[in-house]
Length: 224
Image 1 (tube, helix red, strand yellow):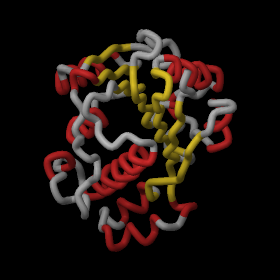
Image 2 (cartoon, one colour; image 1 turned 180 degrees about the horizontal axis):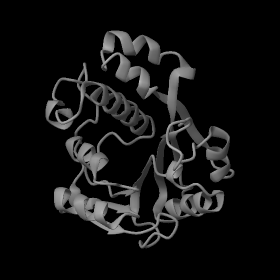
Image 3 (cartoon, one colour; image 1 turned 180 degrees about the vertical axis):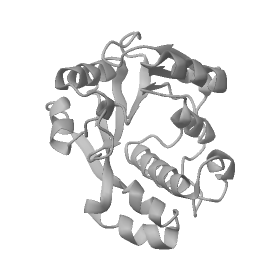
């Protein structure tokens, strides 16, 4: 199978993927994807070939663009978003992936339909604890036994009153007795923008844990 290992430095081979972004946003997306792929590798996913993927809160498909770049078969990828216009936009851009307009707390998919589920900045848009709990349950329901859920979300977000940060303690509580592999990632975007995404300046600061604004976590569904 093709390795998921990214080029070093990340800029090599990734120009087409990130070319539409500003220098600051490129840095944020590149380092997010680097951490994401490292997490997948730690959990035994060394290739996206043949992997059935669902993204919760897919928006206009930006993360699905990244999945395709790193080897996912779009015919095995699905996304769902509560905003019908965004789901439609994603479908127009990334067909043959499948897209649906719907609520992550009531997924229109059968049990055990996917190998990998993603919730990238999805839980923070759900402001109620009960809705978050249902979405977590649903994400695990549609995973096959042994499947992996990856969560990437704000642990702090002071600038958007329409969202609520996902704290590490709540993240762990959402999945009860299951082990949650969690780390802090992503240098605070305002800092990245001040330095215009220059790696020589951003990378040293990113080593300071309290300057990382997001959580990246993996939850494995129990094998039967």
